[in-house]
Length: 468
Image (cartoon, helix red, strand yellow):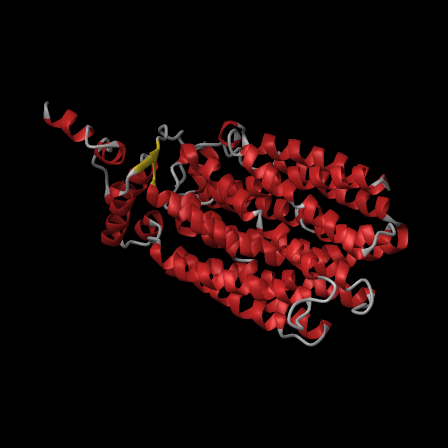
């Protein structure tokens, strides 16, 4: 009897591992990971994912800057050229997300994340060297192969390794830090406008800096272990044990409560579950999450990207438009940081519905306003609630899928998000120029309300639960 207290006193990480009853190999590592506290290795994984995400978001948000730069002389592009430029990155993502997601389930999360960041670095530098709108659109499409895959792969990796009770907190802090990328890119371009630096145009510097950052993070990712949960699901038990031991040996930073049990719908959808019911549950989850992802970018991606074009349409100078866009991007930082404290306490669907209704209100105020103070407030609040909506949706979409197919299913669903993001500029930009901001806002609000309706078809997905 005395051996057990001695084993438990070794520390939170070791205590969590020791408290696990001996089970069959296919679940042992997953249970050990679920019962760990937050360790220094968890923090390192979160930090590197956040740095990578900052450059991913920066590259995506450069569409805000490009929509303003290429709407005015001397770089004026036609409406069709501008729509293709804004949509090109999402067109690349439609192909990139499922492909890299499939590779991540076959070869591992970490190695594919490294490859995605390396590819982003290369294509960013090619974008900086482009000689016209057509070449820039092509390089943006190439970058989209990585940009479309990084978010779902990052969320799949974090879902695999983070303690369930702290998963929301650490994921939202990752997003909050990553959210510094968009305003950093926007303000870099604004600071260097209109003359650039050393004869290089301001917008090209954003691609140069973004490429260097993505390449540096790709190298640092080599310090991280592969997901023990994925290794175990892939039948590589010895490697799974070794990687789990790295987390267990890492010093504790923050305690974590035991996880909740998975809900019934998620349990039925887990890989290895028998019968037609499991397959049907996975199909329903994939269909409903894919539809949510298809509807989301009309508000969370297209609306912020077109803020610059809306402000130019309202008669603001490009410098002022870039200032408003840059300030509004801080809503993503503030929203993610503040929501980190309570995200694990709110049911995912409830949070998504509340954020959707708030974005409808903010988007309508932005479309109707002409005063700078109201425009900045409405745009910032819109991005604030978007900052809650997007990571909650992506985290929810990752949680409902089983480990063996989490990256693949998450990335397939995410590809529908990129389809929506690619289509939105072709609809919203002509609508903005032809019918005005209010008509554009009405379409955005309609997609948000449709998403709220779809939520009730989705699995419940309680916060803080264990995943398969």
